[in-house]
Amino acid sequence: HGEWFSTGDKYSIDENGYFWYSGRSDDMLKVGGIWVSPVEIESTLLKHQAVLEVAVVGILTENNLQLPKAYIVLKDSVEPTEELKDELKQYVKTQLAPYKYPREVEFVMDIPKTASGKIQRFKLRQPQIQN
Image (cartoon, rainbow, N blue to C red):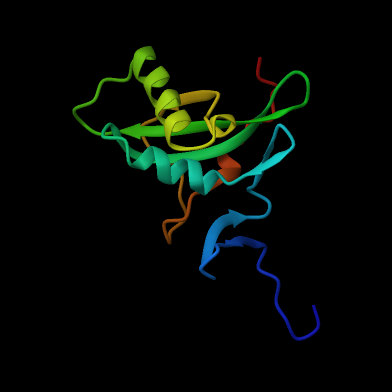
């Protein structure tokens, strides 16, 4: 835009004038009509004792609604169970606004990344409709 370069990054500013990174505009999720940052959900999940790495992307429901899905790499000593999936969803609900919790959790061996370590979200996005 003129002499300015638009990176596509989204930030918010708090009451003290600090800027907080929310993610790239094309990675943002619109959940129930409200914008949600996958970075915020990822940062929250990373605080859980079982989580080593995480990436959050949007999935579409059969009603064409977008919902968060978390791909999680667990720490070596942690067993992937359905109970842990429920625990992680509840954990996010207690730390963030409840509508931000991931509706689906999938345990994976690794998260696809670029050579510089950035998450390749496009490899995690699923074109099929989720129920």
